[in-house]
Length: 98
Image (tube, rainbow, N blue to C red; front, side, top):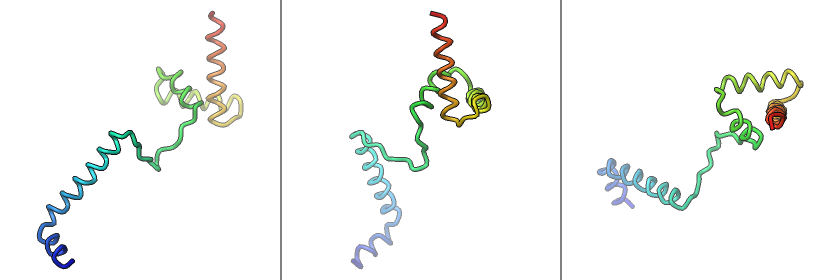
């Protein structure tokens, strides 16, 4: 054990490079195998929000948020329900042109 610590102390740059290489190799293997690491800071996006973003994708983010806020005030509801109301109204408008 003493020899290993002495070797590492003398070659700290090589040891650090080896650790980085091992981490990189592990990440590469996980990526190739399709394993995705979870990001604890990423919030879950509901299916309603995904559909809302797809349907109103041509709008800028500020405009989408303003639309959600206006539906929240109009129907006195939360953000998720406001997105549903916006999608339902857009669907009704799209069907009226058929």
